[in-house]
Image (cartoon, rainbow, N blue to C red):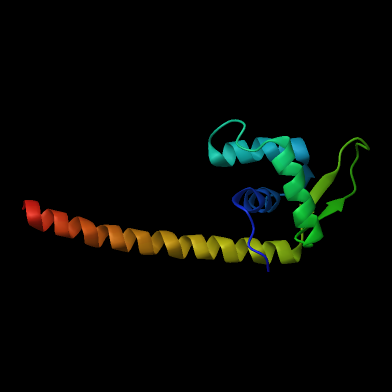
Length: 110
């Protein structure tokens, strides 16, 4: 699989919580990131198109014909799960490395 950009992974993370439309995806990514306007419309819609092309998401029926609603696919869930596992391992390695670095500092100052 192609490596996804962080904003594309954010879209998968949001859609793992349920199907929704573009504007709501942007709002949820803002909540996820903890800052407003973290993803603009151009990034969102090019990201959605790439995820559609890779079959990581798909469109679902909408009650509002003006809105396109997206849902994560099983392949998208697998990609999301792999990403979460990879990031968890990375953070755990960083924690271990940092604890080792801090011990050296404690010894030097203690």
